[in-house]
Each structure stands twice: as C-alpha cells, then as structure tokens.
Amino acid sequence: MLVRHRVFAVALGLGALLRVVTMLGFGPAMWFNDSYDYVSVALHPRPHPIRPDGYGFWLLLLKPVHSFAFVVFTQHLMGLGSGLLIYALLTKKFGLPRWGATLAAVPVLFDAYQIQLEQLIMSDAMFTLLVTAVVTLVLWHRKMSWHVGAAVGALLALTALTRSIGLPILALVVVYLLVKRAGWKPITAMIAACALPVLAYMGWFKAVNGQFAMTNSDGVILYMRTALFADCHKMKLDKREELELALLCINTPPAERGRTAQAYLWWDDQNQLHVFGSGMKFTPEINANASAFAKKAILAQPGAYLAAVGKDFFRAFGWGRPLFPDAKTYLQYQFGNYYTQKLPAWSSYKGMTDKDAERYENGPAATHEVKPWSDIMIGYQKAVRLPGTVLGLLLLAGLYGVAARWRRLGGPVLLPWLAAVGLILAPAATAEFDYRYLLPAVPVACLAAAISLRHLRLPRRRPRPAS
Image 1 (cartoon, rainbow, N blue to C red):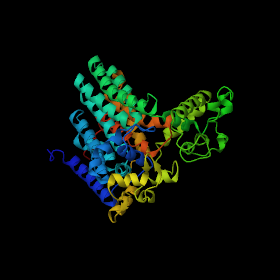
Image 2: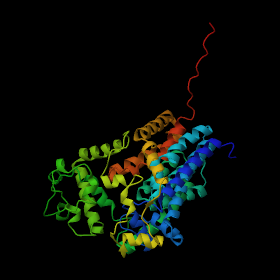
Image 3: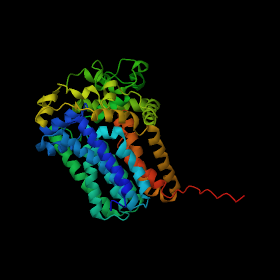
Image 4: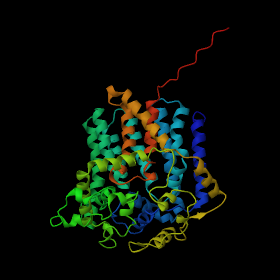
C-alpha cells in the first residue's frame, strides 16, 4: 500500500520529521496568552466565560499523563491527520492523481506556522482537524444515511465546543445538504447530534454563570471590533436613557485610536471596558451592554464597519507577514521567542498561571530551547510558509470551480470553499484579524482548489514538423 502511495508517504514522513525536530527543540511545549485559561479549566473544570471548554476537556483527558510534551505530540498527530484526510478524500473520492493530492496536502504538512501552532498549548490544531473531518465526511458520502448524519453532527458539536466559531458551520452544512437533496433523515440526525451536546453545555453554563449561552464574551469581542470607528455622536446615544451604553463611549477621537482594536479589550487599561474593575469585562451585564453598544455602532456607521471588515479580510492575502496586532502577539507565533521561556505569574482561577502549568506538568513547564533542533526550526520558519497571496489564489481556484459548476450550485466545491471563506471572514466581521485565524481555513481551501482543478488539462505541445 505504501509503495502505491510512496509520494505521499515521503511527504508525510518529512512532515512528521519536522514535528519531531520541533518537539526536540522547544520542549515541553510553547505558550500563548490563552493557553493558561485552558490549563486552568483542566485543573478546575467549569464553563469558562470567555471561550468554550472543548480543548480544556482534552487537556483534562490527558492530565493523568502529566506531560505537555504528550499534549503537543497529540496535536502534531492532528496536523498530520488533516493532511491525511485531504489526501484520502482527493484520491479515493475525486480521482486525483496521487501527486496532485499530495500537493494539496503540502501546506498543512509543511507550513512552519502550522507546525509551530501545533506546538502551542492552544485549541487550533484540534479545531482544524475537526473542520477538515466534517468536510471530508460530508463529501465522502454522496448519499448520506442518518447514521453518517449523526456522526457529522457529533463532529460539529465538538467543533463548536472547541471554538464557538464552529457553530455556524452547522448552518453551512445544513444548507449544503439541502441543496444536494440529501433527505430529511440525515439532516435531522445531524442537527440533533450537534444540538444535544451544545444545549447541554449551554445549560451547564447557565447553572454556573447565569446565562443560557456558550460564553460571556461574544458581545465584548464585537465591541472590540467596533472600537476603532465607533463614534457616539453619530450613534446619537441618549445619556439619560442609555447610561450603560454611554459609559462605553471611547473618548479618544477615531482618527487617533491607533491601528489595532485589540488594545481596547486586552491591554489598554485606560479605556472603557476596564473602568468597571478587574475581572468585570466578561460578566453577563457587561457582555450584554457591550453587544448592544456594538450593534448600535454598526447600524449607525455601516460604511465604517464594512470598511473595517474588508480591511481585515483582505489583510489575510498579503504576501508578507507584517507585525500585527502588536509585537508580543506577533512574536508568540515565532519559534525562538523569549515570551514562552518564562511563564507569567498572572492571577488565575484558584491560583496563578505559572503554578497551574507546573501543577499540570508535575514539574517545570516553561519552554526550554535545545540546540541544534531549535535553530533548525527557527531557520525553517524563515523560509517555508504559505504566503497569504497563495491562500488567496487557492480561494480564487475554488471560486472558479464553484462558477464552473453553477448549474449544480457549485457541486462538491461549494462546501469546502464556503467553509474556507467563512473561516477567514468570520473573525474579520466579529473580532479582528489574527494570523492564527487563517490556518484552519487552509485545508478546506486546498480541498476546494484541488476539486476545482481536477479535470483541468494543460494543452499538449504539438510536435514540430520535420524540416
């Protein structure tokens, strides 16, 4: 079997080798600002107010091993698994030549930032695999039984509980199956299998946090999206009737608010979300008020909102990788950054972030660089990545495939193409651009492009007439 698929086997082996070098060079794991919340959930299970607990429960499941190295090992397997799903779907179900299917899997297997993200204690590798698995399972079964529909629904539930942006993918899959006339049984089974775990989680969230929701952060994050342009004069807020919203007005004129909205949520403690006191940003009341404020800002300034969304959407397709949103966030996506070599001593739920990590690990948990392996990956990252422009070309190839199959409403290209566009557009519309938000879109963008171009034939060169 491996002989028949030797091109892909070599690519998969090289991808695995790069991941081994990464683990040798940056053990036991690398860290991001969000990592410590996931570890806290694993130590003290509870519905987290900012993000769903799917990944935190994965850490809880692996907790008896007491090894972040083992956690990132599973995440590297997830990355390789995404590449394997791409290859299997394209060769088995769409008849692509093995070299073509291997080429479609190359960005997932070899992109340095994908590998680095797998080394972080973060949910992205799991989320990417789940999205790829959902699309693969739907496209694999041209005629879907209710059993397969239930399996897709279960995967969608895991996707939504890993990152809340995964829930809209359910609507996307439902629309796709309706277009394909899959029948009511698989669609009903899928919705039920997805809804039951999600509703159960929301019920638990309500019991603990008082709101029937998945988080207390959606409104606050949408407020962040509007922070660079929201103008209370244009919103015409009545300070007597809408005092709670008026308190969220940003006094700095929009032209002087800088280049990143994230400052108004995370690190600028002089602005409005911070004046209510430490730990108050993600309460139900503040979340509801921030949501109402953001919606008023969008309705009052739709042009400014669309401009902000468009700017962040098209930022994804630049060739370079300019520093954004700030130096610390940018550097945490780089091998060899100094932020991950000493864990911060921040206050956490029933503890401190550094002590939480050490408790989970049963020992030191900060990243330890080991040469020459670390130098190899630092150099590799400077040379091997998927530029945003190439991602844009993949989406254009997918769009060509949708347009060429317009009589069939895009055919099988439609689902992976819409998933890829949605995964890039959703953060731009509801939060702000971040480089790591692009990576989950890559596997489905590659699938859409490969399926689109599978029948493309280059014109053969005619032989020259004999002289």
